[in-house]
Image 1 (cartoon, rainbow, N blue to C red):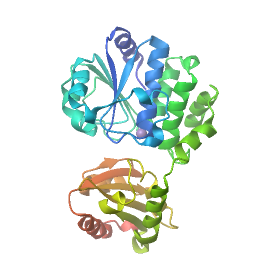
Image 2 (image 1 turned 60 degrees about the vertical axis):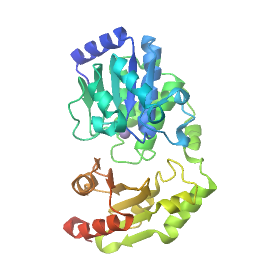
Image 3 (image 1 turned 90 degrees about the vertical axis):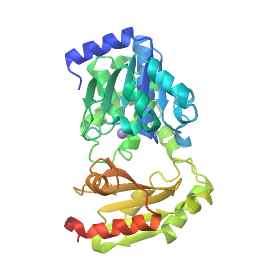
Length: 338
Ligand SMILES: [Mn+2]
């Protein structure tokens, strides 16, 4: 949590800033959008301040119902304008990421901006590019942390449905619908405050889940039938998809969201991995259960990182070479053996 002194300084900055920007990581997910839009609504409600949410690149369609999502500034098709916004900002909130390199092309303008920078984030090893840092790697989500901050300021009476549905979406998506170990009694108490605003949580679940296209389901069908490999000798399962397979199923950003969890769902599996070829690069999602640290594996071998049980990585090898490299590594991890 921010110290009392930090909070005083932060409130002063909010009140005096003529321009406030909220930035999130590239490939923004439910928590990135939920925390940033939730904070945007809070700044409006509590301080009558308009903040702009800036995302490095497009967000998935299944999040475009979120209150405020139509006013999000997507930087990758207006790079010059985004640079200008960061440059002229007096206060920048950095939500749901721990290092300036996580904002892709916005890294340089963000690092160079003279704005006062505030990080709220739950990823490991926050780097020192912000003036104020609220980091909690045990938190379920950045959305929960934003809500804790609102409660800490004793402003929970200002919560409204717009704020609540954004923060609820962030907490729900980052906890796999309240399933993960990081989802604690504190998380549930925070969520109770959100439900007290009268949001329809069942409608939010429907908006997030029942958004499939036929092509997406057929892509998942292909993945399960022909592209899922089970290695019981390493308690590992992985799915690998080529760019061609994605394209022939009219792939849209977000279509692979959650697929990796099905690799992990095979009985007695400790690690699930998804390799997908996108724009000539291999993107990798790692998931694990228990104490197997996929963030370490990813940072050591696939230029990635993240959480103990959920991490991302990339590879510039071909898809087959990447999968072979991954398979060759498994014997280095005796804890995967049954
Ligand atoms: Mn998050």
